[in-house]
Amino acid sequence: MEALLNALTFVLTACWVIYNARIIWRLYLAANTPSDERIKVRCQRCGTTYDVSREEYGRLQMVKETKVTKGVQTPIGGGSVGVPTSQAKRYLCPTCGTKEWADTVELERYATEAQGKARPIFRQVVICAVGLSAISLVVALLGKLLGVS
Ligand SMILES: [Zn+2]
Image (tube, rainbow, N blue to C red; front, side):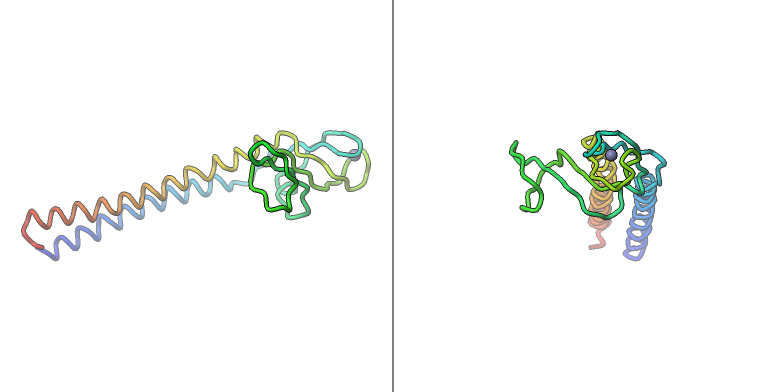
């Protein structure tokens, strides 16, 4: 009987983990799907608004950022934590013809978008963990009922 319970635990756990791993993987893929969406930036020198690709936007480079911490604006570099209110990177401006600092238009939207994608993945990990403890609890109760342990 104990071997049967162990087998049951194993099967339930394996099924649950596989089920969750598949959901998490799907969510991960959905969050990282390359998008051909263009991101609007505004040239700080001439004021032209133009598009850059998501790839170009996400590239690692120097960033000029202003963040809000408890309503006070602090320039980045002072280790401030907060929501970015402005973010500028250097892109090739079509009007100036040179690399100029350009502000991200609709920055808030992109910041919330990134958060919105991470949240369901985190939630699924929590569900998976809760489910695992529930399985061991149920099996332990079952063992007690059957007088195994
Ligand atoms: Zn320009």
